[in-house]
Image (tube, rainbow, N blue to C red; front, top):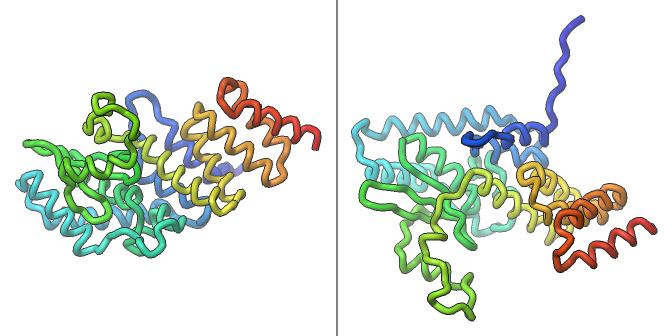
Length: 282
């Protein structure tokens, strides 16, 4: 009897990439590229990875073997933002395609976090100690150098001073908080784990689809968020509400019940309980 193999679904493929054990790292570039599978099911992720590898090889040929880290960083930025022309898609910032890495690679346009994922892959390939930074409102990247760290805007490659970072952070600080209660700037500049970066990418898409009331696409994103963060109970609630909008009452009840079981003391628990009752009556 000939052997047969079941081809994993896009969600199963994503789940296999993010199901790493303690001390293991998620393959960020591959997992981030897979997010596009829901909208582009024919995407060849391996071809995308090969294209990024080809860019890495082009860049490596330009970097002397004995180049200092700062010199490597300058050559990387010249290549990424200058020669390749990557920049922010300011004309259509909230388009979902800005979160699909294969399209960002093709058009050279994206949003901070998608540009950052590509930039980080090239930076780490050069041996730079480069990390994503989940800064409020605008994803950043940083590179640790022998004499300190450089924080950059992945939309432009420009380095940001402490004053510029503090200014960007100000709108997100509570106006009522006393100065001594405010978290120091350094806490906002910690390296973001790959799982957090993927969650932020998915939540960007989540808000786009929710604002457009595109429940089918929203549901696909929430499926990935729950695979990535199974204990993020608010995502179970939101998936239940998306199921309800699509007329999928039984799935909605199950997800909303899971939310109440684990987050029953939440402020919206009575509202969700009433919603479950309404779905059961319907």
